[in-house]
Length: 238
Length: 238
DNA sequence: ACCTGAACACCGTTCAAGT
DNA sequence: ACCTGAACACCGTTCAAGT
Image (cartoon, rainbow over all chains, first blue to last red; front, side, top):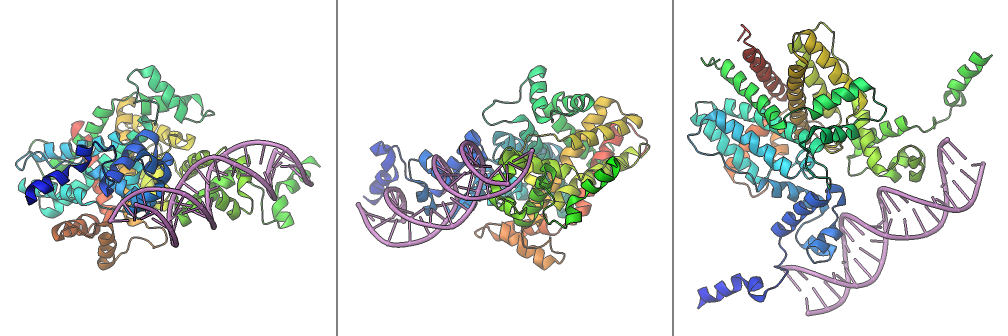
């Protein structure tokens, strides 16, 4: 009897066909992240987020303490997407590439929210779990704990910086992804450069920002660091 | 006569002892950056910035088109502090270290404004001039233009990422610099970690964020990349 | 326990009016 | 040309009141 009753109670909204499946901190944060993805960080307000959830803006204060807490929550929601390293016996070089690629992927998936990663002073549990898993993986590969953390900090910092700058320059709320054809890219670059900039600087901006395979460029930095680690450790492959 | 007259006209405010030396786009942007440094980005408003400049908030619209333009201007103001590379015949390794160190220094000097660097889609003239100078320096050291840009992108991205994450975690509007003694640092790290995080993750956060010489860690990443470039180029020093 | 209406101080922006 | 007063729609937040 008790089990059956709870089973019924577990899906009251779906059973009733309700369009409003009960507000929850987690649902609020996910909706906030979606809102920022779609409309940009500046457009986010308690009123409008409430409207998106079919509720008055003030109702959100039952689930988040303030707008500041909501912004912290958006960072937390982003970390929910982080995955653990591929396997405990994985090659440490592949693992570092995997970690960097994943940090970058999350940032590129949420370019408008990404600056919050370097604005809010929080370390969500999920991110700590991820670092913890990679520390263990590197230690299994022979790194000391201290060295593992040094190396991980370097990779984490690089991946954040690369993806944040990339997201800022390539993403554009409401104007599509970074264009594949070079002419459209040149157009986008031109918009970023002051109109009174001299010709040779505009050309430089074109080359520096526009004529570059961003995936290859990202991999280059990681490969340089891995090679640096190999050399420092006296690896024969260097 | 004309020269003397203009000399007098050049210092009208100082001569009259006026406390309000005429509003200017440049002065507005500098004041905005100072305001953000002192009070944080969230506290910046047209009204309050006007008050700081002894003027009504609406008056600022004579000098900046909108608050968005003001935020772009803050990024521009930050780049005014960038310096050119040390000398044309400098060692390229030292030059890369110099560039990275300078990007980091600017970000650490303006931690509250720094997220704007990855939020506003602009490439100020001064930053382009800086990149241009470094490209020329690397080419003099034997790099092709393309390779020089690849390497510079890597260093620029790393420096931004490192310094942005560092600034976010170490700086704290109104609560002083990153503490030197380890206990105070542990306290600051604890505030960033969710209260319900398990012990082993709190310990990890302490080690990952707290027990680390940030200058050495920064240099490590650059050194790894330089070593990687050396190895890739088949330099005998590897 | 969760949601709402009304209310508050504050914010970005405009525009006609001043000098 | 630059600055101001008044006005607007919007925003974060509170609180007493509803269910």
